[in-house]
Image (cartoon, rainbow, N blue to C red; front, side, top):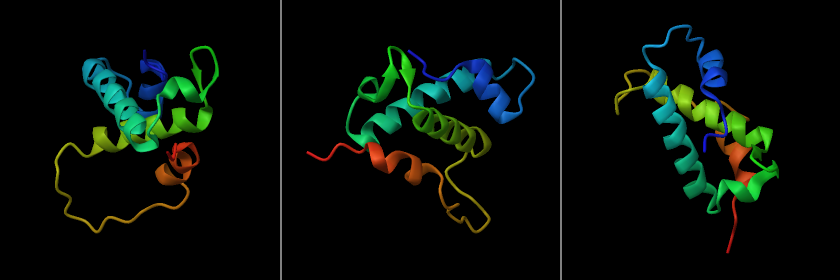
Amino acid sequence: MAYVSLADLKKHLNVDFSDDDDYITGLESVAESSIVKYIQQPLVNCEVSAGVLDPALCHAIKLIVANFYANREPVAYGVPQVVPYTLTFLLNPYILYV
């Protein structure tokens, strides 16, 4: 189950064509899986209502998809810098410490 629709992801990515729809949908699945591993709990535990994920986690999914969409190779030639108040800021409150 995708918590963020393809239409919302395409809007976030500024993509107005359908050639990459399958690729973007696949990235959404990768983003959800990565978040589950990072926060160490199923996303269903973070739903605000049935099938509706907390907005902060939905935005984290969009950020991951956008990063993977823009950076398709494992190397970068610029100097990467962490943008404050983004991914870890959104995800850290949901980590389940056991």
